[in-house]
Length: 228
Picture 1: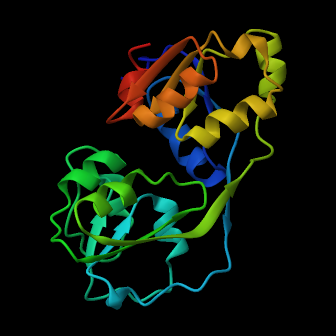
Picture 2 (picture 1 turned 90 degrees about the vertical axis):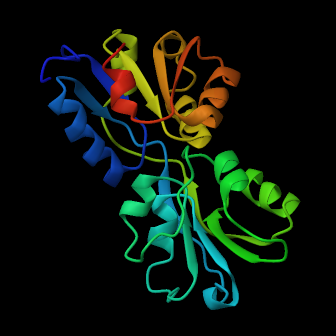
C-alpha cells in the first residue's frame, strides 16, 4: 500500500488544519503532498436561534460543527451530511443520507410537513438542501454562521507548475477551485492536470472553470487518487 501513488505530487487545497491531516494520508499511500490552502475559515458575528425551537438541526460540514461549538443543541434531532461530519459531533446523530451530498439529504431526511429545520452553514452555501426540504413541506431556516475566505501560504505551487512538478490537484468545494485559480493566477499548466473533486458539485465547478480531466470522488478521495 505504501507505494500505490509512486511519489506523485498531490496539491491539497483545503484549509491548513484539514490539509495537514490529509497530507498524512497521502504519505501513507506513497504520495508527496503539496499543501496549498485555498480557503480559510472565518466565523461570522450572528445571533444563533435556540436549536430547541426546531425539530431538526442539520450539519453539512465539519466547519459547521466547529462554528456551533458552545451551543446547546441537546434534545434536537441531528442530521449530518456524511459520516466524516458525524464523526466530529459530540451528540448522537439521528440521520445520515445514503450519499454525502445535499440532494440526497434533502430527499431522504425523514421529515413531516410543517417540521422546523435549522441549517447553520457557510455564507457561500448553495440553497439545494433548503429548497429541497422546503418543497417537502418543511419550514427551513438556513443561517450563515461562518464564511470561507481565500487561503494563504503553503508550498510554492506556482513555481512547481512552472517546472511541471505537480501531478494531481484536489478540490473539496467550488470555492477551492476558484481560489486556487486566483492564487496561481490562472496558470496554464494547471488546467491539464487531473483534478480530483469531492462530490459532483465541486466536479462541475472544476469543469466550468476549464479543467480538462476531472474526477468526482463520491466516497473516499484517496481511493480515486490511487487509481490515477
